[in-house]
Amino acid sequence: MNDELLSLVQLQETDQAIAALRTGLAALPQKIAALEEKLARQKTAVATAEQALKDEDAARRRMESDLKDQQQKIVKFRDQSSSVKTNEQFKALQHEIEFAEAEIVKIEDRELESMERSEQLEPQLAKSRQEFSDHSRVVELEKEAAQARTEEQKQRLEALERDRQLYRSQITGRNDGDTRLATYDRLTKSKGTALAAVENQRCTACQMGVRPQLWNQIRSGQLLPCESCGRLLYHDREEAAPPDAAPGALRNKAQ
Image (cartoon, rainbow, N blue to C red):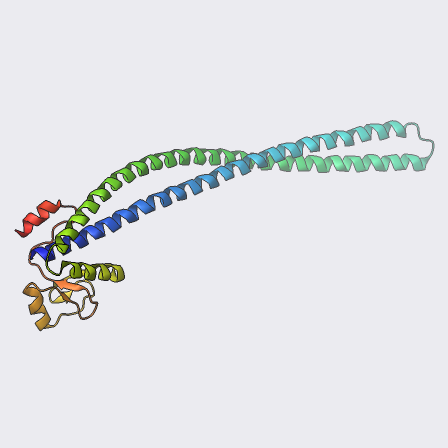
């Protein structure tokens, strides 16, 4: 692999590593936002369960007040029934007493139903509180880890950006380097990658076969476009250098 091709391959590997790091950096806030959204829902669930219990307690207090009112009515009507003078008046008071007694039964039934709802709500509230507490801790730990990863990845990104500038300067420093770099940038922007290795006489990007004549030219060291996808094809018998290797080490490989 000649020096120009090596610099281009290194540049593409570095650009891909930079893109992956930027994607990872962008995903971290989204992950935290999703965790915080879940935490907000759990907080709402706790507040809803607490309010439901308060509502049931308030409802039972009103029922107790209504119950006392009906009981007082019964006492009043019974007192009045002892002093009535006509049978019609007595029957009317008895009717009022029966009505009040029926209302008491209804109130007591509603009280029982309210107590049963409260008994169901209490474990739900306890569960919601526990989930909220547990998830709050998870969110805090994730935030701490995300902050650490962010700092680490930013440092890695800065190092890769320096490598990228070095590789680009190595390319522009050669004959027709500016033109080659412009072609690389154009292909990268439109296709995601500008270079593609040829293996088994196939472009590894689009998997289309390479004609024998073109294959021979590529094997001789020429950098030529794929007739299918347009990427610049190259062939190298040696394994490509890893994208995070130091620029100096990568250059030594070509020497």
